[in-house]
Image (cartoon, rainbow, N blue to C red; front, side, top):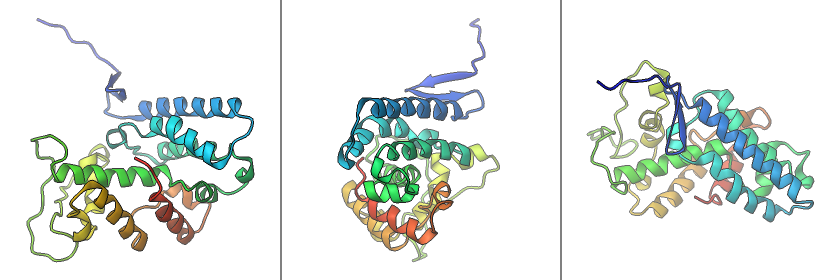
Length: 236
């Protein structure tokens, strides 16, 4: 008979998960690695322009904070803040905006918040799944069959659950945002068309796109405007 051993932490496809199915350790390690890269950029470059800083950040730092985000989405505000703090620290490398509030730094550099990008990425992944872009036969989503004209024809039934772990899982947390999208967005023929229509819709109706970590430093209306406008410039 084979013996089994208890493991407190495992890594699968470079994503860490502990024995409580928490991704806290993954967030800690990812942010630590990304912060080190930000430090290397600061020590290597004596002078940074807006364009150079953004290029370095998008190619070297942000991928470390977004790899596999659909799986390890931060559950607690503290972890969300820890991830966002990396981007905040990176924007402060530019001397001309170092003393400005974080949202103004994002506006200057034409960057959306990381929390907004994760939410937008969730919608893109869900569109790909529902429209068969991802090769999988297992049905994770229960498409609602209704004649209700509100929302869209691809609404997903949201099942009740009592655990926060389940509430924060991809198949559960995306339901409300997806169901609120209009028919023209969810039925987009291509992924690029979906992205364009999603950005246009959120520009008009900024639903669920507000990271609480940023609301402490700027009025809600100004934050909405910056996040939606500059999200269209985000690369995937």
